[in-house]
Image 1: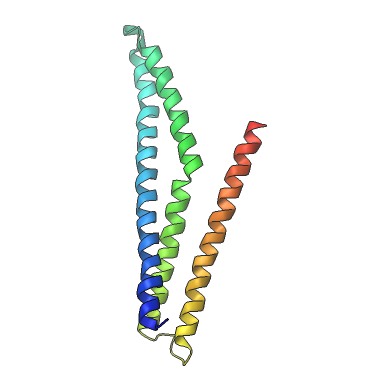
Image 2: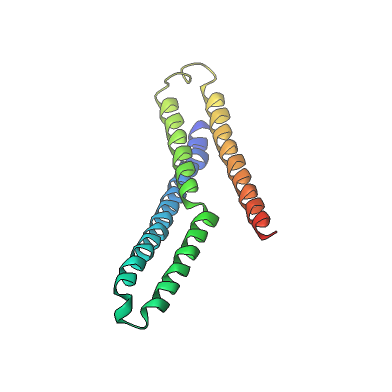
Length: 147
């Protein structure tokens, strides 16, 4: 595989993937967290006007349950953690790409392309390993909480 093919087919593809995944994790995190804030903030307001309307205690109970469900989805989906990890990996890959293209250290020597491949694949492998460990620990936490 040539340098241009690797950069285009592997490196740029991975940068785009991590960029997209980071963006979607960020949006999902902010949406769920925003909904959680709105529901939680509504409960005391409803409690203040609760005596005037008979349906308010039911709405407060539903909102409380929604807050718990939203918090559970945030914890289970780990959107904030994924957002940060994907963004970090994306920016690290971009950094390597531009250092290579400008032949900045450590890419100023004869083995620049080999070094690029080694470092890029190491970054991707590291992120995959961290993601796998996170998933396993989340599954373990979920299993432990059921016992």
